Amino acid sequence: MNILLFILTLVISFVVVRVGAVAFQLTGLEWSLAKFQALSCFSGTGFTTRESELIVGHPRRRQIAGLLMVLGNAGLVTLVATFANSLRPRIAAPSSSGWIWPGLSPALNLVTIAIAIYVTFRFFTHGKQAQKFTQYLRRKVRETSIVQRVSFEELMVATGGYGVVSADVASASPLVGKTLAKSGLRAQDITVLAIGRGPDTIPNPRPDMRILAKDRLLCFGNMDRMKEEFQEPPR
Image 1 (cartoon, rainbow, N blue to C red):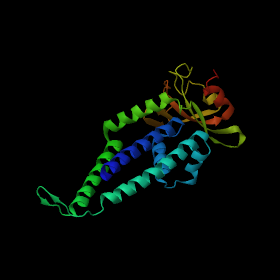
Image 2: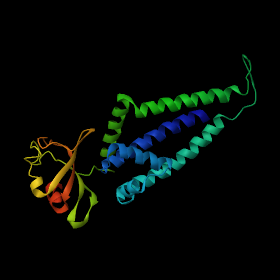
Image 3: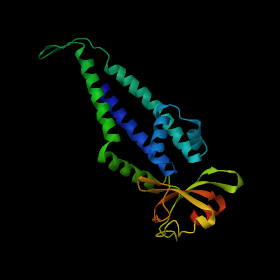
Image 4: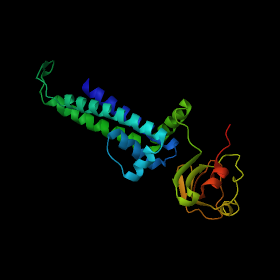
C-alpha cells in the first residue's frame, strides 16, 4: 500500500510541476525558465535574485508560486513517509512456498521505486508523449480561465521611457506578412531583439525576416510607442 501511494504521489508531483510550468509560461515566461521556476518553487530550492524578481514582481506569478510551494511541501512529506515505510523491514511470515525472508520485501520495494522514478522522469522529460501531454495540460489550463496568456508584458523599464517588452502579434495586426525592414518599427524607435515562433526562438532576426501571426516579439524601445503598437484595445 505504501509503495502504491509513493508512486501515485510521485506521478501527481510531476503533473503539478508541469501544470505550474504551463501557468508560468502563460504569464509570459520563456518555457525553459518557466519549467525551472516551477520545479524550484515545488521543491523549495532557491533561484537567483534576478529570476526571483520576475516572480515576486508579478501578482499572478506570486499566486502560482505560493500554490506550488504549499503543494510541494505536502508532496515531499508524503514521499518521504511512504518511502521510509516501503523500506521498513518486516517480520518473516509463512506462505504457501515457505517462510518469506524479512529483507526481501524492502529490497523489492526499492527496486520498484527506482524503476517508477526512472519511468516517470523519462515520460515527463523526453519524447513526443511528453510534448502531447504538455499541450493537453496547456489547453486545460486555458479552458479554466484561471491563467490567460498575456499579449503584452513589460519585462524591464529603463530610464528615459525606454524598456524591454514581450508582445504577441495578433492575426489582425498590420505587421503580419511584413518584413522587419518594412514594418516601420525602427522608425518608431522600436528594435526587435528576438522572435518567438512556436517552440523556437529566433535571436537577432534579419531585416528580411517576415512577421507572422502569433509570433511573439521581444522588443526594446520607447515604452509608450510599443504599447500603442502592440497592446490590444480594451473590449
